[in-house]
Image (tube, rainbow, N blue to C red; front, top):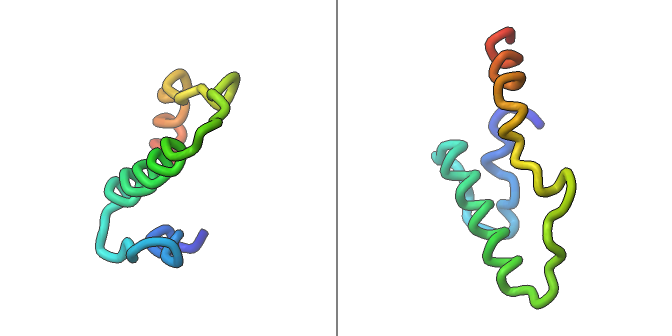
Length: 68
C-alpha cells in the first residue's frame, strides 16, 4: 500500500481520515467493526490463530523494526 493510502482506506463508507493519526484510524476501524459485529445475530467466536493477539510475538516484531 503506498504511503498515505491508509488514510483513504474505506473512504467510500465513512468520512475521510485525512489529518488523523494511525492510532485514530485504527480506533475508528475497530469501532466500526465492533458495531457491525454487535448488530449481527450469529457471529462465530474467534478460535485458533484468529484469537491470537500477537503478544507472544512482540519481542520479535520490535527487534525487526529496530533492525530496519
